[in-house]
Length: 291
Image (cartoon, rainbow, N blue to C red; front, side):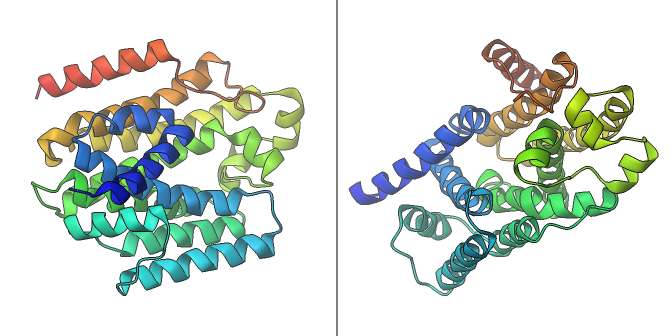
């Protein structure tokens, strides 16, 4: 296993996920230690890409930093290891697991799309975007989470389905923040028009029935993605099934939190409370026992 310096590199990655996502950390910290560390390293890469785009800096500077990250990834795939804890930890991950660099580049493509944000016209366009920023993460993790069972088309589709479902949940949670702070509307134009939603009005007056109707249509898409994943949980390594299932349950629970707050994803930051998290973890355990 890792020497002292590598342990410090993994500790850096663990600190990143612990600070940025309580739900993911709660779930993946239950993995066997080596697999958990590998997940932390991949998360640290995704976090760095995401933070680069969301930083309060000029767009030109963010594009330059994202390009630098892509150059580092290219160098990494050619055998170089940039002098940074995340890259050193990832080198160990790529050494221990049969990793594929393609979804890492797809992740950066998703971030580029955020930097040069364009109107999302319909659900198909939203799902394509969601693949790049989140479905790609599922593919990054597969060599770790299906290390023993192996990777086939079905489990790839399951991992992508989960990632897209999580991204749709993100969008449904962050409507107000994305609109106000990031000047982005991820809700497809076709849905906005069909449901007669006027976002400017919603931002001022709060959710109305038209907005709730649109929100629930997208929530149904997200929930179907989770269900597709739940049906494929047996394809993952036995020691990974509970943590992966917990991560999906905790994330899907965010939508119920929005509902309990009267669909206020405009001014409130919705999250799954500790008590509910415990309940969802128990649900995941029961679901696996039935299999």
